Length: 184
Image: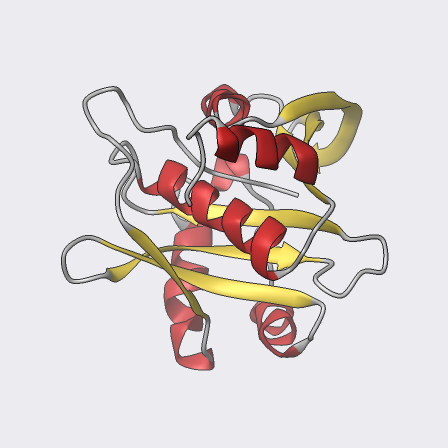
């Protein structure tokens, strides 16, 4: 799994974000974000056909992130395991174009609300490249717990890279909500 998310700075509170189901007409935008040199070090891009399948397959949720006053497209995310009998959802990918404006944090909060509320997940997990320390800080700040490391599990130019596995459980989300740390 790969993520490219940068936490909002103290100067930028979480933005307003809406998740909208991705349509085939959005795929050029999605592919352009994956090929952006600012994102490539942190993700493993998919082929167009993989995104097309994720849009159609019921176990996946593929969303466009819309933000700002006009709710313009600013990123995308993919959830996997939406029909899993184990109630364990994977945040497969989240890519944000407008970094440093709180969009990633707001999107992550909305994903948790969808996962634990709408989809009734027991566990929401992700893995992130070890070098993506900004994303790890965001996830930890949003209540995700480090479970471990998949050592040198992704082949990259010049060698291999490790992935850090992180998760949140429904009980942890409920406690955070009671403390006012999550969306109502």
